[in-house]
Image (cartoon, rainbow, N blue to C red; front, side, top):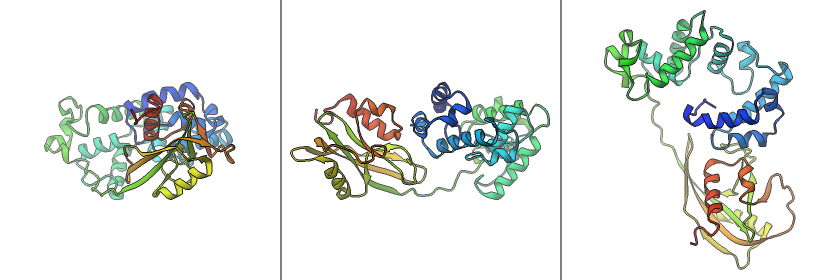
Length: 318
């Protein structure tokens, strides 16, 4: 969960996750739907699927336990060198280095390492220093300390250098150039994608949702049917409901940013329709009441939108 997400955001999700799935074997036995529901809102849902798959492999290959071998750990989905090092150091006190964002910042400033850490040469230099600094004894204490140092003292902006125990020998501090290290990722223009979301709502307030099977940021989640044009959505609506006499309206655009593009999605409300009986594949396309959507794995912006509808069924007409 801490990969690509801040601690403050993670805590409530982690507590709920551990309450429902306290052991690795519980996670392995859970359905993907269950895992995605607990993860819903954290984003980067590929992490959740990899975590789930890793738990299953631990049951199959390692008697339901995380292995304490770096190669075996890195063979599990979603675990790279740094995550494996963190597990080995924090769980077993073994001297393996880590290189998360906080550690990169500390090492880049302390040693004056120029360049964006995403460049292979720069990353290799950071790994070299991470290996040298990791002690043979008390690796767990050191690992937690350097992560906390980066998170609370050697912060990205406004670092608390006066409180830092490394300031005397720190290159960036002694040269008064902490803002220059580490170098930021070169800016790239994220494209904006336009889409239409079908909000097909029947007279009982149920909404037609589909499970997204195609590879992408919301794979495996339930969401509103989406397309770049309205025609396929109209065909979908007509295939599942009688539309005569219903209200149709474009609702305020949903704006959401991903790591590689901005999404501008316009909800197209077709309201008070009469559904046809029967859904061929209810696990892929189905009608859900506002209350039932609370237990579905939904993308955060879609959940927010549906909550607006649930709180005010007549929105936006009133």
